[in-house]
Length: 599
Image 1 (cartoon, rainbow, N blue to C red):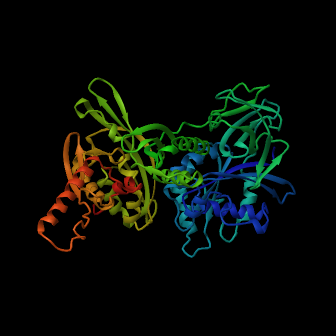
Image 2 (image 1 turned 60 degrees about the horizontal axis):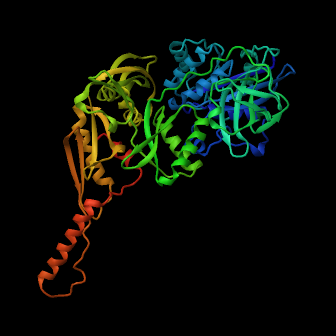
């Protein structure tokens, strides 16, 4: 027990977590040289293509220390992006310590602060690692001062490393042994294990990652999920080295995987307590805080026959990512689909890409939106996740919208542009600090609907890519809002409806109609595009019809022959317009609402 160390690697995006994990794996020779590759713990294709960690990964490292003992290091590599902060929270709950990686060239960033505070809340022992010290632009002393001033941690025992070259990583391995505490548990108590993560295997059913808090797990024993009292026979237990390797037993304090031929996806709830069916534990573990989605998007199968398969795919993905929600909805334009809740735009993009790649689905996606509260005159409170579901405006007293607190780290010469962007998004400034000569830290309260869609892109644009931001939901506030419906040939399209402040409703409606005019291909009939607030049309554009040359076959004769053919064509187009459906690209919903600075 005293030789076990459980720790997570936490940091801001691109500060070198996965590269440092590579060097630790390489140094303890966990894999052979021929199997070693960059970002070895990033197993998904999307992670490798985008260069980011999406899923927290665990690996057992056997370290032969200078004192002659062999230590078992359970390492968890975590994501850095704000949309995957739930993965970080889950990983920290299974550990006793954290390695805080800070880029020696960029210093403390927004997610550095967010993640280190999560670790402090879990009472973790924190080892500070300054990475990328081999780069000419690194400034170790300046970054140390930033850490002391902004986080309040002592930097006298900071470890300086280069995860790329491997310099200093051997000192880190010794520091983990000396500074991160061993787990304190009691093996003689009944089994009590925390379900940290899970995924679906086609052949084995559900595979779970667990942290053993008390007792031990062995193949053949009967286990029980506390949340739903489902009982299973344990088939196999083991560790990730980083490949799966079975073992005879998982002991107290260890992190590993279990397989119990679990076929029902709904039986596995992330954060659940697992115990021995014959000798159950008395108290449950605290588990994880329920995740509340902050934005919603609707997924519809391009082929209506794929609806059942889409539901099964969403259930299997939910097993692997408990931070999103889904429920069945029906749209007049797009048929049956699912309204899904996400933690941000990147989260949405990744989940959509996983559904299309891993399950070979063709999806039509509606424009993302946040959840509003409509207070009606009869006392009812209606939760609105889709603006098309807005009650009759005459029955609404007022509408509340969600607000978020955003923290932005940036170079001090970008302050004016960033403040201007936040104010344009209806933000209210909370504080502005200068932690260093060239760094600024600003806090704003902003409506969540203003930041989920294009805020990050525009922030990077006005700061030349140097600003980083973190956000969290704070509350709901009353707002002067309007639901704008987009009509195509007088038919409202659910996926294009949006909520906005009344002062900009007409302007945005007009801009989207103009955008749709470019995005929707021309049809055989004229198409009318309209933006409406309630029953009032505030903007209109038209897409002209194709004109087929019906007179091409004429080679002479009277002009009345030509007129006769043109009249016949006009009647046909009129009939087609009355019964025809407008066809448009499946990504039009997202593209139409992604308006640029000039729109």
